[in-house]
Length: 195
Length: 186
Image (tube, rainbow over all chains, first blue to last red; front, top):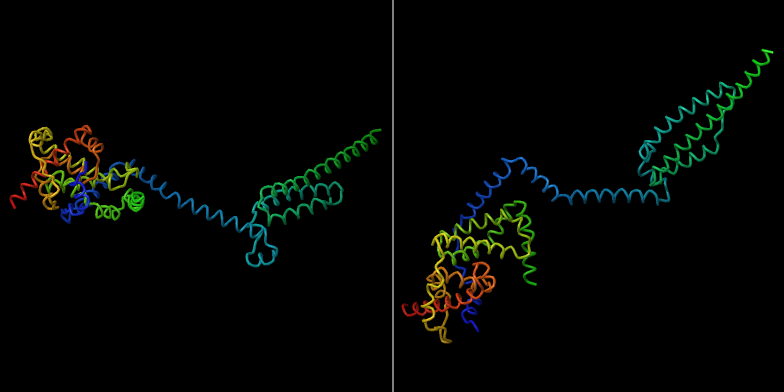
């Protein structure tokens, strides 16, 4: 059934909204909202806490964006350094020291070098010449150079400390051999004097 | 398509309201206060009550905004709040809804005034709506002006769809009758 009345009302819909609320009604609503918010936040600590958490979640994307940006910058810096053909210009633009790249190297070196020097002086006392670690030395230096360009710092540092440990092991072997020899010698001397 | 765009336009203002942004809340108030006030005016038929409804509706809308999931527009969500609060006002005022059958005899006996020659005037219809009894006015304005179908009206008023349909046709007859009377008087 065609509803003429409905059609007419529909075409003149806007004219039916002729009343206007008093202009200061919003002030009342705003005042009520204000008191409601105060009541919500002030008396119960838990509610305030809940609000803080929700705010944090709401702003989480900002932190995520900041972290992403940092990661991007770090990666691009690394890539730039790795792909750069002229390390001289890089060094000039940005003085890269080993301490900056891997501060652990210094710790490792001081720790092991002390032990190595002690062993070497013990060996000297036993009458042996300086032990030459030519191959180990060159390997170590190569590793150290690689530190400037590698993204895989941990593996390199492990290899470097292994290198140093190997020297200590070798020195220990040497010491053992010398001590054994000396023992044999002194025993032989004792034996000869006893006879 | 238009509805989708409409939702998107308000979506970020609604989001700001959820954070308690007073300016955004005022934006929504400016946008909807007039139409919502008129919705309430038509149902309550009382200026002061309509203002109370408007205030309560906006307050509870902002308070319950987290329950608004955006599956309808903010406007239609708010309108349902306004309508529900207005109906509560009418019902508490009368202590009970005007029995819908009260005017049945009249409606059935009344002649159909809706002839082609009858000329409608907005002012005339508005006046006639204001003189309708509460029960009739509710169904009539929900259907004619707020754009709900009988299924939705049935849900809003907790009545059956058939009742909504018959109530509307009776209210419509009564309205035309009132308009005829007015034109005689003027």
